[in-house]
Image 1 (cartoon, rainbow, N blue to C red):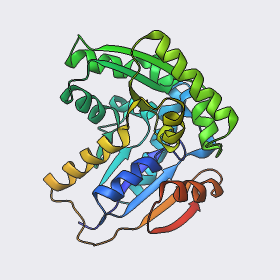
Image 2: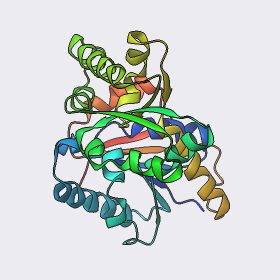
Image 3: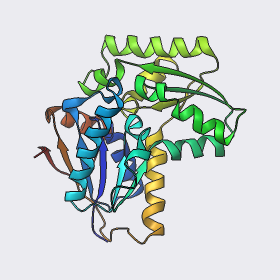
Length: 260
């Protein structure tokens, strides 16, 4: 079934999901859309986010994808509004992460995401539905996704924001198990660990890629190629993608283009 997997995000963050997909499904072609022009989504209203998401999903439909990974925690919180409107499977990034936390019997969890993601309480609600005894602390970031999307991976400003969030979470409770609940954040995972080496960082991108792999395998949709290609489209500046591709060591990049 040589159709591609679609991956969409508000900017460059979803490339962390692409990285995990290339590790777990090296034969799959991937079509990526990053809406950098409108990033960060986490500071927008739900109506804005939903309208922008529908535009990206229409783009995926036009390109005949076989499944779409919603590589954005903010967009994933709204999945109930769009998941049944297309004839391809849409897999959000939140549920696989929740399942992992429950399966690993983690009882103290810290969530760092965009302000929108945290305000929805999606992670906390889903975790407590599975296990009401889990202790959840969370922190919303207004600045971090935008800093990363502009390429400030290791700037003093970025490090200061990361340290502030870690300090705030530690004041609230046990923050050792930290979910990076924005796909931009794992791009600077090294910064988090440099500031606070004891952290057990949970990367939702890995869990989502695993869920995509299981879905394709169980539905006989796996590609028969040895190496897949990656095509990137963005509504914003294409230059930032070259830096992230190098930082994440992404492979077989066929094109980086502005969206039509």
